[in-house]
Image (tube, rainbow, N blue to C red):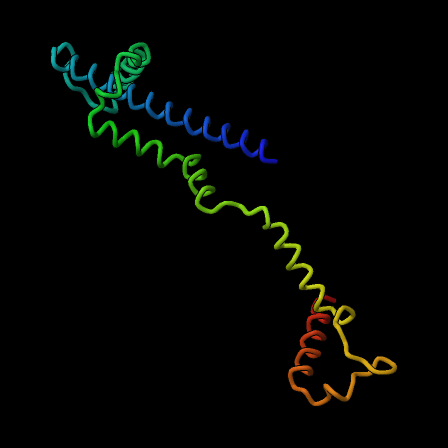
Length: 166
């Protein structure tokens, strides 16, 4: 069991590392896209145009292709503080990351199944046939507990629980 748990931890850690690397790559592409846009606009080869136009969409696609080709040229040290914030935002707000953090903070207990079984056992103990009776001859209760309100309440609750289960 320990070995299987360790393997699962390594796999999950690998998944989170891959997710983080993907986030870094997304930010790198954005950095390259931003640089290319600035360079093109700076050289005034293309003037500014409406972001919703077909030209703008085509321009975005070509920038993404160039960004994919040049992604290894951007080092992490070249990220601005905004880029680093975007990276953290992408990683932290990812569903897989949030689930992993939740699982670490609130681990499933192995005893959870045992607790469920214990609750079932407690529920079945309220059955009148499982109740311990201090009985005399013929199953009658002893005179010792007669008139004891706690004993009577216990019998009443047991009977009510039995009635509800049926």
